[in-house]
Image 1 (cartoon, rainbow, N blue to C red):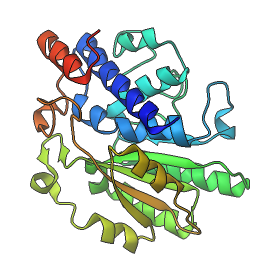
Image 2: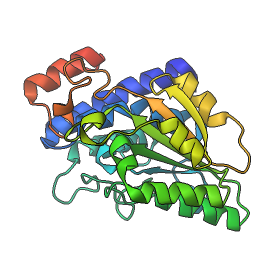
Image 3: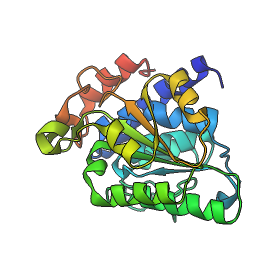
Length: 269
């Protein structure tokens, strides 16, 4: 898919996210919107990942920041893993689409996530397993700012370095905000690039909303070290009244806000 196609998919996915959260009246719009372009480039331009494939015989993506599940669900539906109409069942009783991803219920979900920091460890385990069986598939994990304040994340990075997991790519959705405020107000992250380089990563910094830059980062060759993509993003990307607003971390839009957001995204029809 070309860049124009990816931009269109991202626009559609953002519209899906708003509709889903408006219907559910709960969920996390800010962090879902910020990682849309990361997900669309992975699923529609990079990964060997199609409905019907054996999960162990394809590339896999772990959404470690599991509260951004609406963005993942939309991408999976648009990819053909389940009907698009099912998106509006988000968080409803009996739905396959719960507030955090459940790999036992939702087609295409590669790991059940939500407890922050654990997804990176899962990804390391999958990448190591792929190495041990001499496989060629790649493992990706998307993490959030709050996760890299977790000790488990750094243990996972230490393991990724020790085992020289060059089939592993960790992507940080670096939007600068978390549930209680800015990163600096909650727990400053310091120099992320230098920290990850000290842990053995090849670090690539990109605009996390630039599809071409993301694709080039995914495809940058690496040998005997894991890759860490520092993706600079905007929380609430695409909706003016949500962008860079910490209050939209875990608040669903009301009817009027849904309509306004959809107009801004060009998804009102």
